[in-house]
Image (cartoon, rainbow, N blue to C red):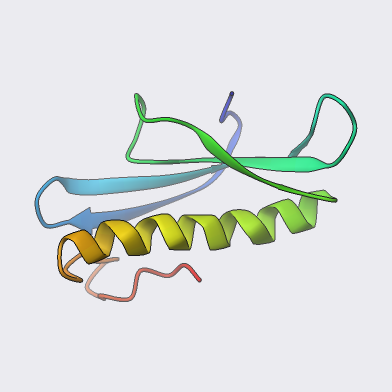
Length: 94
């Protein structure tokens, strides 16, 4: 699955590994025409590209933000809430 073109990137800071880029790709239609998906990757190239699917591009974007939020929350819990976005411990995803 392709991530390009990337439409947004946010850099978080992990206390053990340093910078953690969160990349969101442009929404695109599923090949079979059943809806849309929005790809994302957490952690930079070499990491697996995942996606959220919806009935249209807007819903795919909304759902990808929620999925990223869940993935980041799990990562943050593993390091006892010490990840940051800039100087804030709020990571900026739902």
